[in-house]
Image (cartoon, rainbow, N blue to C red; front, side):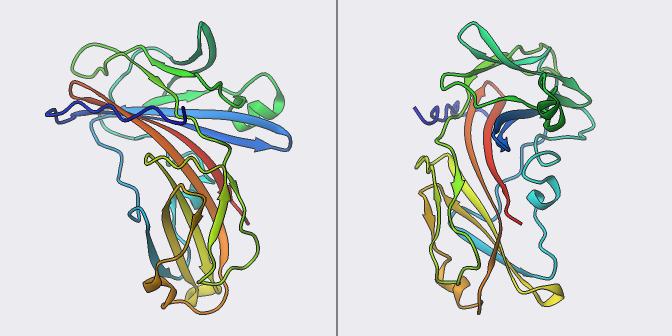
Length: 256
């Protein structure tokens, strides 16, 4: 199963939100997984641009992925005045075995690095996560608590960007490992030219393995574009009472 279906309770407006983000990557030949989580009263922001659409801008390319290098400051809802506690450490389990643990850290939770120097440096553990991995949130009672939940961690084939070199506005962008599920999306960052007169294109595509720039966007561009970065997210959203938990698997990175 690639992804647990969305489980949303009808008729209840959430007032507490949790977001747990697992990043799947590779350094050299070492696959790793790292993660962060945060809980609060503010819902995570909607993805921009909308699915299947692109945004154009000029000058420096601005995107959270540029600042976070695919993972980091963007994850979770850090810095809220009254964060919600989900209890003690969050765990990812493979049956009875604990695969990784997210420990309380500041307003959220984070994963301490693994036993090797490399894993300590990236703040992760050896990956990938097992196919049946389940996130266990212990929960905490009270007005500033989040309920206990167990949620399957989203799964998908390994995401690998395929389109290399400069691309034309009419060229189809491609990647392998498409999940082809509605809860997955791919964000692509492209740039044409340099300096203040450069043109930037940010697109959010369904995870089908290919994407063509909309015709209206192509008409605004001339000449080749560089692919600056490509990122995929696959998510599960589950609701319990007035609490909503979003569990995300992220992959990809900056390409230059």
